[in-house]
Image (tube, helix red, strand yellow):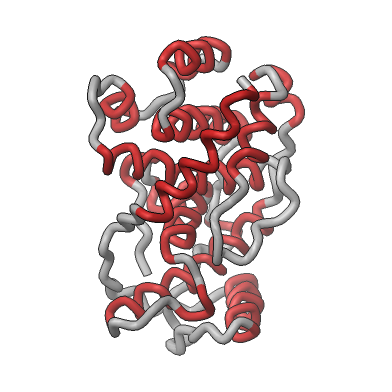
Length: 249
């Protein structure tokens, strides 16, 4: 399947030209008394934002991810299954041939891993161009899952697309069994740190949109949105399933 890596560059260009990030409006948030870990996490995130010239949310009693003692991170097996499903969705979106899609689906037991929404897409005989574009954006979610499983060292500053060919190669080089064995789930603290940071980066992007300004710090709003979506799923935000994840700011 390595011969299909050239298709990945095409998918990136397609996604770049067709960013259709859903319009979202900042919603009211609760007034809370943050815990020690929430305060410290927020301080680190805000320092990061300021280093890139990104505005920060000033209300000290709102806009937090839940404290560590109230969060249950998705299990390693759940994340492995989601990773493989997202890879398949991305491959279909960029136009991989049906024969090779079928082989990938068989090798990685994909039908058992798809959500109801994904099943609708993959069984559509003639997906629209927008559906294909939306599917290729899922490579950004795949990137987050690979990071959460320890296959990628860091989540870089979200101002550009991930390296799709490198990410997909990680999966193609391993069987499902070996991929699962090699996966090493990151700590709750690491995942919550990223969830808190992306919450603030997405808030800044939404605020800029509301004010008819470009995203601050050269952020790519599509990449930020997909990371926020994935990280909210990882931390079980509001106990939402994959098809129903919200990215409230």
